Length: 417
Length: 115
Image 1 (cartoon, rainbow over the protein chains, first blue to last red):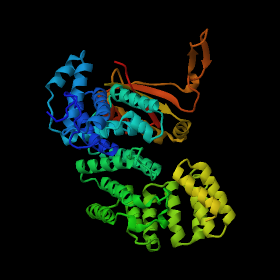
Image 2: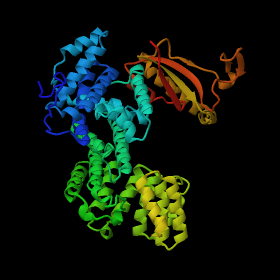
Image 3: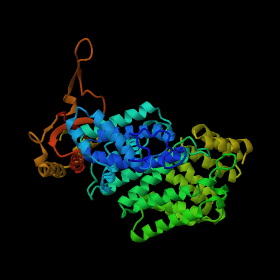
Image 4: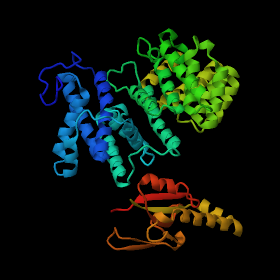
């Protein structure tokens, strides 16, 4: 029995952490165990929806109890006990599940394949992207519906509806619970990585200097990618995404100044970057590149991030290399946003006029994209077109709802730099 | 698990088919026949039905006080259902694998049949 088991009520015990658990700690512990439990219950019950409900219930109970009682010594067993008891209660009428649950003992020997099946089911291409994201966060990472809603600034009822619909589709349309066959794997893995990449992006862009109250989705994204890398060690694009996320995280500390304002890459204090983490991520990327031919889009994006991260000073950035990498990326994934980023590399290798000409071509595609106008503004300013720069910044300001970006743009408009 | 495959035509696809010479069209039909032959074990009650063009459709709406009969398919749009087949396969992935190799019209909807 754990020191602070749900059965004893954990009266006043502080648990193994010795003090009130912080939110980040809770998130980490829940994430380390919730997916495992979901996978085990799913395998046992053969019913995705039922397994998912039980885990969600256990997680919610844990998040109510642990801040008060402390995190138990064996969080996995604790969650399991709650899920099992709840299951026996809930499934009273379903004899078949009941018997299975009664037989289940913890710890179950986790089959690594279970988690993989879970991830691939959550990210099945027959589910809408928003549901894939919500399911993955809830089932694999153990987030509650409320936490997901807060992270995406979406009403909780909307997230709940997405999850309910997705679970119903999984059951009714017979979306299988399995790891895809080898011939489907590249496509299905791309789907999973796209979901994780979106999580990462959302977390990265919505981050502010003060993250005390928001769930760190970047953390979840990195954790998921690392989990996937362990389960499928020979997939170069997983390593690519992992390197990409780590290269960004390694520079997080310098993204905001003392007054909590967003600092652009060129103005960042690079001594505040985590150079050890940068070197490790770059090494992971090199190792992966050596073992596989033709890098995929995540490896290319990571290589671009590495070019930035490895430059000691902004002036030492290897723009020629970055331009080549963007060209390769565009061959694999033509997209206006990638062309926009490439235009910045063009600015530093070929000059401002070719870069502005490139931006002009993208005008229709990116008219509603704030970064497009902010980039134009910067180029205009550097070319001495102050008024056009200000107009472009104004347009970017109208389009963004990211507070950190708003601050920065307002500053630029006010001070004309 | 039973699913109905609904085959959907677009004006572009119809035009493409009409522009084909007799030989080319025969080859296109042959690819369809081959596809049905490859998956013969999955069809229930025959390989399904090809429907006549949308201009032959009549729709009856029963949600008003009186039934209303109108000319044309129930959904206004360029994409029209041109045929359907009922299949029996293990799960959605098997249905997807099969449908991904479909050689003719550009859209196929997969819908599970209520059990």
